[in-house]
Length: 168
Image (tube, rainbow, N blue to C red; front, side, top):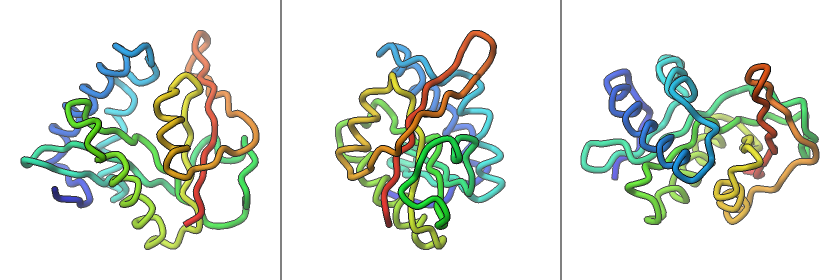
């Protein structure tokens, strides 16, 4: 497997991978991603050098973005608010490749990259109905921050998100 930063030539295949992730989430009644999120954010992530991916057979099997900020970052109580932290967004593993430890390996890569970029903590938000993701992050040592971030998508949809973090 190859791990590297994404480039614009990866965009088409990344969108295909994320659409498979979205379809799998929908089939499991975790309808929180759609055609806009995360797919419409990937090009900006690539252009800003914050999207990493893992390839197998020249196809993406997993990806994540590391961001300096998150809209919910001040809505929960982190262990240490004033330290440098990076936020992992758009973490996904192709459902065809699930159960092979790829997600765990990608978390190791995310922590390594975040630390290399000077972060003391890796943080993320996960929607309350995404029980598999919550269990996954807790299994890998992330701790839940106090509080909840209610992210209003539109007048009819608000996502309730929990903050998780791990010291690097």
